[in-house]
Length: 324
Image 1 (tube, one colour):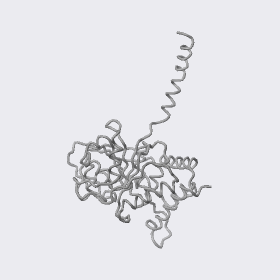
Image 2 (cartoon, rainbow, N blue to C red):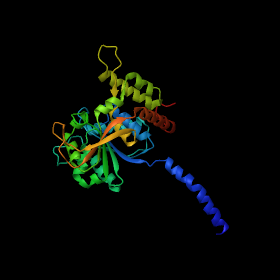
Image 3 (tube, rainbow, N blue to C red):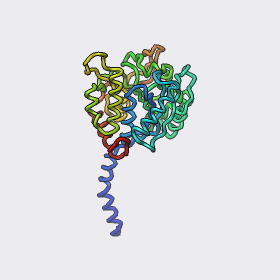
Image 4 (tube, helix red, strand yellow):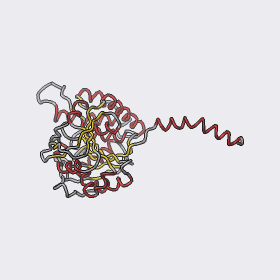
């Protein structure tokens, strides 16, 4: 072996463990699409901030979803709010695609709705497969995800669904997101798409914030934190605080962020035989031969520490209106 080859071989031998450790220290980014009924409540805003500030997420797109509390056409109203959050409150002039979803629920379990969000999901899923799935986070009505699968059932082999919905295991239950399109959730549960669910009981136990806790967390944490605090405070006084009482102990829940927590391995979960869904949003536990993953707990201490760290880092590297 000549001298140059020997030196090259030695250099590679020395560098390889270092290179390997560097790759090990940088986990692969997670390709995700979010479907959100942002504007319906305040938790969607927190979820969008976390999604776009966390470097682990490779955000392929965000789709607006409908809700009956939004001005019709509901998904268009949600889309306008989504753009305002991303472009104005987060100050992102360059950002992942924002798509308008369907404004109405499914009329049957066989008839999909059409929307830009549905078309985007079908296109975005094409580069994925059963061994490398696109993660679809659904934190509103699942109309667009169900419509995409109705249009192309093979998409169930290219994505996985992580949903915030239902009241608890094993009842299922008429939680808000589910009620907004029961037929769409029936489609998903009947399909072959892998599904993870974060239900309301676990959210309530792990993601509740009192007024004081929310203020301490974000009120003085830059312009984005101040905006999140304003959103929380306005919602709290309008919907949470008992009238004519000086009791501020009642909390509100940042429900939707449970889907991101699962994706970031901040939860525990169990696997159950997969139920079907009755029209009253209760579970039918007849045998389906499939499974569903159900989130059982969430490490809220680690979650909020990560959320705030990401928020701080994002604001250090992005110019945001209202910052000094």
